[in-house]
Amino acid sequence: MPPSPRGDEGTSRPPLLEIVIPAYNEERRLPGGLLQLCAKLARMPFPTAVIVVDNNSTDRTAEIVETWPHGPVPVRLVRCDIPGKGAAVRAGLLATSAPFTGFCDADMATDLDAVDVAFGLLLSGERVVIGSRGHRGSLVENRHSKIRELGAFGFRALAGVLVPGVSDTQCGFKFFDGVLAREAASVLRTPGFAFDVELLARCVEDGSEVQEIPVRWHDVPGSRFSPARHTFGIVLELGRIWLRLRAQPRAAAHPAWEPPLDPVGYP
Image 1 (cartoon, one colour):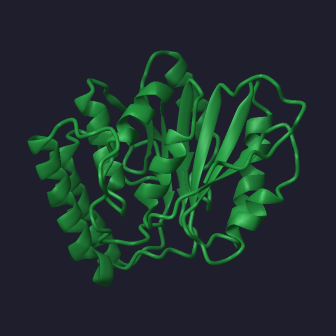
Image 2 (cartoon, rainbow, N blue to C red):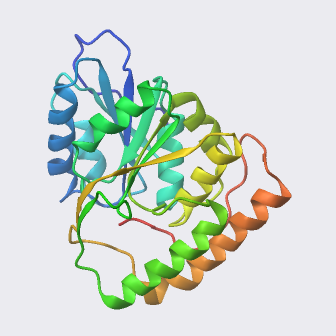
């Protein structure tokens, strides 16, 4: 289904930056998140836009976007029927056309002041800039259980094999050169939780370095991740990514998806 445009009809200049928000049943958190993001982008001295990807939600997520008030920052809807955050981010990135693009979570857990830093680095020539809760300059409010923290430690160790030197592949705040993002998204095959690892690995494979920046990050209630339910699937996903990158470094432009091991993969 084609995207539904929303926004200020008087805005004629194409956006320099487009930000994707993947959303699955986010009717409670999305309005506040959109307000924060649009307010931030409206203060920037160049045109911007927001794309919300409705990932087969059963609540009012799509309706919220379709009825979002016109304003200086256009907000449009893209629908993705393939379950999984990775599938939604892929659909959103492929729907962009701006010179620079990125994605963040609907809960805006990462303080949006980091947008200024990320965009500045992109303008200076960096092609991949990601928020990192593992950066020594980050301020992190974390209410996760010890079991979840242990699982995160194990995940980082495995992800480090695929994306060496990156301390935090999973922070939902990533920005890219637009051409690179669309090229990497076109060959992305991981629909679930571990999609970030494959996306970053594809960028590194292209010859780009990953620049991590410090963030202020606060834990927002509502996570759907469960160590008991998702750990085995995530390890299997990482194994598939490892095999895929070595067996077929550049897959077909529109690859078939792997069966979703984590059908949601949202924070």
